Image (tube, rainbow, N blue to C red):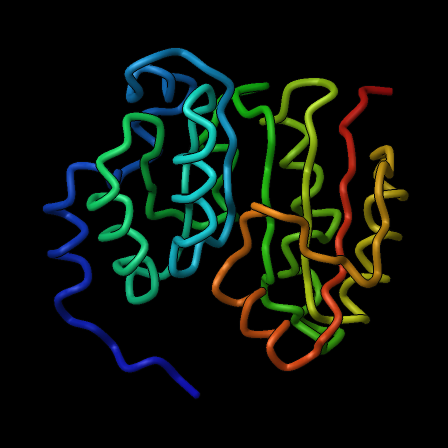
Length: 211
């Protein structure tokens, strides 16, 4: 179902002091937007924001950036970030296609990709956030030995993503086709929804090692 356009979304985000609407202006300088210089973890496709806000709450020694391209969806995450009043999380409205314009080389130390669009049709697969086109951008913005954590409910996307990561030289650390929830683990709204439907959650952890 197509989301109804929220005409107030952009004005709301513009007034939110935790959201950066022109992220290209801060390329290579993101640490200046946090109280302390700490490792930066990036979530691409933040959705409702539950995951990234709770990660920031639990890990004050890490700086978090929540990124989404859809103002309609991101406005809810923006409100949660604002209400949390944490000093180690900000949000940016931006498209993953423009990552190299938004982040400097080796500026990010971890990437989270949670339940992204599987784009099942062959003509659309280049839009997948785990497709080699994106993986090569991640190599530019990630520090060496940084990690990517990827979760999905989609079997085809998961198996294809294993191939993508291996093909692009990432070191596979964990492959789990039926991930169990650990105590105090942070999960997103969508993960909770799929688990309630008894859908198996697939998980990959990979490391970026320069060849």
